[in-house]
Length: 476
Image (cartoon, rainbow, N blue to C red; front, side, top):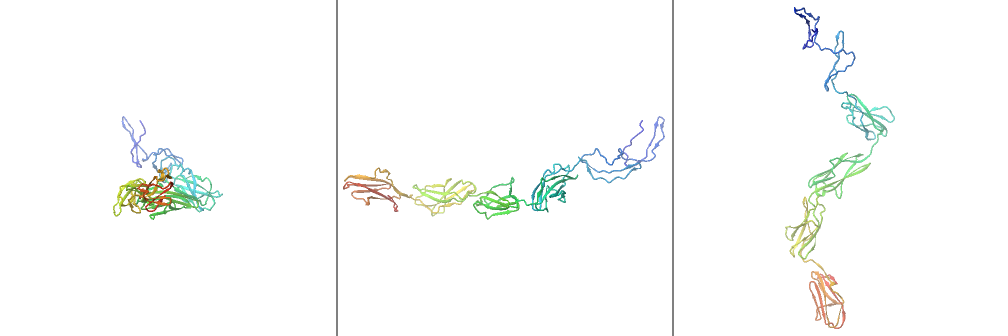
């Protein structure tokens, strides 16, 4: 039989009296009662005699509050103040030093620093950074920032021009200040001059294609010290009146509204400061109808009542390849233009025209955006027989020196050409020959023939033929 017993489910902090009775075969004996009441409280653990204690078996990431009470023979004393909430988590530590600390810029009175975040933050959030400096040959480090710096960069101002300074940076978390990282070598407070540089990212484009009537914006991010000046120019032309330039300390843009084909071309922004210069060129292509063909003129009128035309390419192709040229004709005295053909060449022969009629001609260029304005010939073209300079072909005459006896007959036959039909004159030495009883002269459109008979005495006959155009031009 046990002589101990545990009573459960009692009200905490309530006092109770207890008594115990023994029982045998003859019955229950007299009770034995506790001399004073007993209060129901938690059973204390082993007594703690040190001023420190490790609390075990806590729930991870659960926050706990603690208090301490002293105990002696007279009882338990009053509890201490409650501690701040403490989360049961892995132990925390100060952060390590930044891996890199460097000078990013400087002026005559300031030095700018940049650094990397610590590889290990000690298991707690970084609250900020402390920057310290030492001047010249001094050995005492002084704090440069009053408040913690949340970013990873800081500019220390109020420095002496040309003086050497050392800097170091330390991170701070809830545990405390971490390790320091110092710059590799001293830095001076001096103005830094850097030539213009252009910042190019994935959105940067040098070639811009825009439809006629649309707008285009050319922009560039840049840097340099001192701040570069930006100027915009257009190659082979002036900037459009619809152009607008906007420039800040680090960005310059050229915006062109209501683009036309004349805005097609190369645009260059020139960046310049005391340290150097840099230029960036943009290409703008405006998709528009082409300009009109140039110098449209007729080359010749052919015998079969056709006219040969020629022209030059447009000054502007409208931003796309010229697909073809369309030729139109209009009889003089009418207002109706008629399409008579198209070609990819710069020449065209217009056929089946009415002889004696006059025609105006014009040519239009076509690209994928449409047709250009037409370009006309300067004057109407009269369809007539083409003019051919008069000439005589003596290659068919085997011997131009003719010797004959008295009373004999000889014939000279010379092929001729020309349009209109040329006038032919025959001469014997300086004497002009005419039809007579002894001389017969016959002229057709393509031949001139002289026949002489009954010469009085033997002699060398030297005859000259003059083929003369009706207007007066000669070919001997």
